[in-house]
Structure formats: C-alpha cells, structure tokens
Image (tube, rainbow, N blue to C red; front, side, top):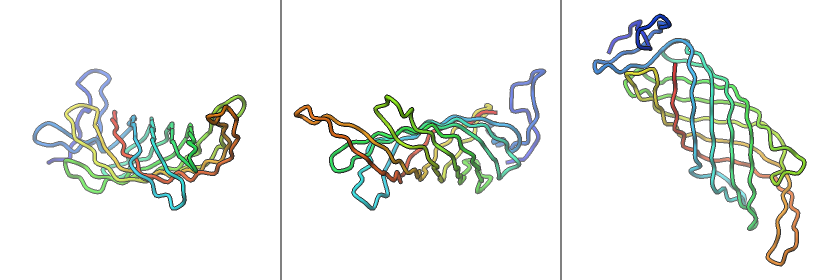
Length: 202
C-alpha cells in the first residue's frame, strides 16, 4: 500500500490530481479534494420507549463535500426522509425535506476503510394546506458507522448503519369503517436505526 499523487480520472486534458491511497490490485481511496455522493436508506429497528411502533422508513441523501486529508471530510447535503409510525392502531406518515451539514472521520487507512460520521439538519414538512400529511418542520440528527470499498475507478461504494432522530408534531385525518372522519393530533419521536447504501464520486 502506497500513498501517492495520482490521477483519479482517465488521463485527459481535464484531469485533476488528488492524493490517493493506492493498492497493488489497482484500487484506491481518494484522500484530498472535492467529492459528491448519493445514498438510500431503509429502516431497521427503533429505540422507542413509549407506545409508538415505527414501521417502514425510506431515506434518500445527496451531498457535496471536501476531503482535507486521509481522515477528515466535511459535507453539506439535501435529504428526504419518509417514516411510518403506528400509535394506538393509527398509522402516521411523516415526510421531511432536510438541508444538513455533516462530517466523516476515517478510522484507519486500510483497504476496506471504516469510518464514523454525523450530520445535523433542518427538515421541512409538507405544505400545510390541503395536504394529507400535515406536520411541523424541525431539526434532525444522524450518526453512524460505515465501510468504504476501494475501486479502480473514480467512484466508491459504501455501506453504513446509522441512528436517526427526528421529532414530528402534526395532525392527520382518518375514515373509520363506518365512514366517520376521525381527526387526530400526534407528537412522534422518530428514534431508529437505518442501513444506508451509497456511492461517492470525485
């Protein structure tokens, strides 16, 4: 394993030089410069201590960032989080469009590179008027651990397990089997594990 300056792209007039950690099989990790990425996540389990039962979850992330060396990178991004919860037999759906700041720290320089990361953002709920899902905006947090896989190309894949936290207050209407409308208010603490699959590019 060698740390060298190499081209992260096939040679052409637009090539940029970044520091990399390169391996004998031609794969490498970038260690400096601009990068961007995408990730999807699904819900695993929840940490609720009340009667809330968290059901499905689907999250999508996109981000831009800068690597400051082998260990640290900072990012800013846009995420969408959809979560389902059940309280007292009623199912509530929450949707947040989140703008966030985050950071990653690589724990080692090994070929399969483990990392820890965190992010904090502000999630905007759906439009309040005429919406089936009606809840407030709010701050959310996410922290996790993951693993980045080396590649001979300027894109790398990673997987992570993260804890996601978000409070959601809102109202929702239901129709019972007799056709009556039931109006509810809720205060949900989304506190759960998600598994993320992503791709990062230079």
